[in-house]
Picture 1 (tube, rainbow, N blue to C red):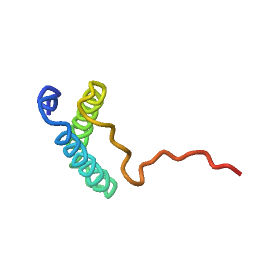
Picture 2 (cartoon, rainbow, N blue to C red):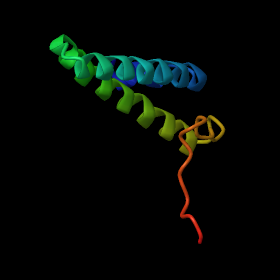
Picture 3 (cartoon, rainbow, N blue to C red):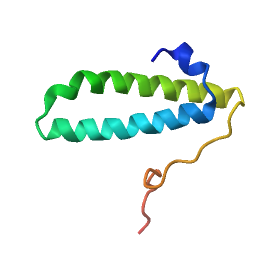
Picture 4 (cartoon, rainbow, N blue to C red):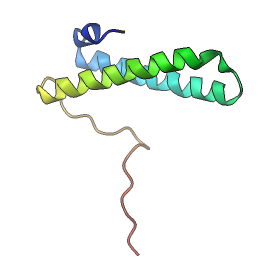
Length: 83
């Protein structure tokens, strides 16, 4: 998907597509780990598309078009543990 096409979409639609791409990447990684190498080209293309989506979302956030989104559950940054 081209960046110009992504820029034409609404921020919520781009977020939804990015989440879908993330799920597809997970499935492809799992399949490739099981020895099915047919998905390698699709995996590379999907990674680049997801990066484009994230770039456009960051541009929209910087322009003030969309509110900040919190990290999904389980993806929070781990802080240092104190003793």
